[in-house]
Length: 382
Picture 1 (cartoon, rainbow, N blue to C red):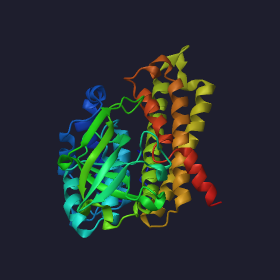
Picture 2 (picture 1 turned 30 degrees about the vertical axis):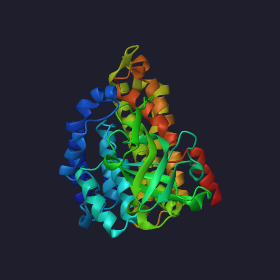
Picture 3 (picture 1 turned 90 degrees about the horizontal axis):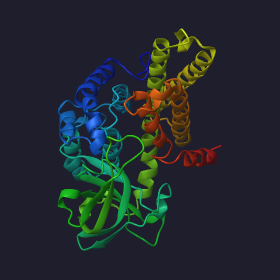
Picture 4 (picture 1 turned 135 degrees about the vertical axis):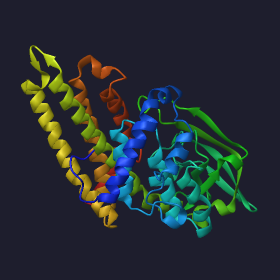
């Protein structure tokens, strides 16, 4: 976690950080090894998190949320990283899914879904990626054709975080298959009422083993027309583009927190571990490498805190959010790789936190839009 309280935080936010850290350390971290073997967390964790107010912290209170700001989302993300509890998919659930509904849902949709997301009765996911389509969202094949008072949904999605437990899935579909961006809509699929909906494999990944990532299949699934997010077709691509900067920023938050943790763990290890009669830290190479890492962490924290402050004020622009996502995840990978080297063979053992941080880092450059896409976005504004 940050060495000092960030400028965007206050006493209330720091209290939430402490509450979240205790929850993740006590309710999640001790089960991570078991969850990693089964590739998903226990369902009851969602309800426990909801009971103490750790879900939807920045959703208005009238919809069951905490009434906070993006700062509250940030401290949850940082606390989860600090507690080494990667399995819980709350960032997707609260920071992403709930905000699509809060930002674009009709009043009826907000009342219907947000309260249950806040309590953990519903687990949220967003289904964008398809087997043949990643960052190029305009090329999705999943379609939802209107038939009376229902849409008939056909298609498949993959790499869906929270896919195993999710019973509310914002699904990116083509309501007009003949159009690209203009044909995209967001349809909320309530899985418990959806005949023809099926979950495929819980996918095995090289990292983040305890966080469920699943395939989803839609075979003539009938979804009521009132589940069209916002009630107007063809708005999906615009909605995605408006919400993705926040998704990318929260990825940057977790990247910075993980980088800070990697450096802290490595400093402690190199000062305790001896070789050739002295601590590893006393070797010049160790000092120089960790000096570089500490500098990167400092620069990253200053940049990130500025982005968070701007986002809370509604002033963060699209290219800067993209800069934060690509640069901080890139540095996360570089620094964690350098840190792992100091652990020698122990760094390659799964039970060591540095190993878990190393394998978990790699996906950060891919999801939320690949870092190559981030550079394309940035280039459009320079």
